[in-house]
Length: 152
Image (tube, rainbow, N blue to C red):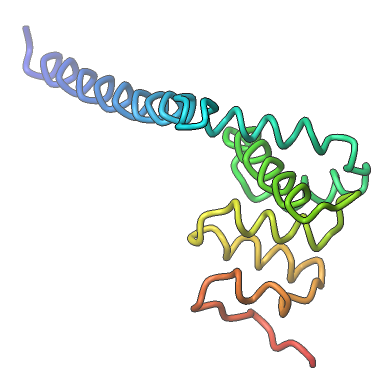
C-alpha cells in the first residue's frame, strides 16, 4: 500500500468520525429535549401545546412578520427555530391572556426564545424594519449598541 493511499484512508476516517460526532451531538440534544420533565411533558411537547392553543390567534401578516424575523436563521435550522419561537410567543400570549397576537408580543417572544448571542441579528432586522427598540431594551443584551442613533 502506498503512503499516499494510506494517508487518504486515515484522512477519510478522521472526517467520518468527526461528521458522526457532530451528528450524534445534535441527535442527543434532540433526544434530551424529548425526555419528559417532572410534569410529564417534554420541552418539545410544551412548544407544540402552546402553538396548538394559539394557532387561531395568528393573522397572515403576523405569520409573515415572524417569517421575516426568522429569515437570518440558516435554512437547515429554520423549522426548529420557528417552532421554538412560536411556542414561546404562544406561551406569552396565554400568560398575558391576549385574544390575538400583536407585533409587540411577537418581538418580545422572539427575544425571550432566542439566545443572547443571536440578538444582534434580531436587532439588525428590527432596525431594517424601522421598529423602535426602546421598549425591548431591558430584554436585550446589556452591551447593546444600535448601529445608528435613534431619535427621541
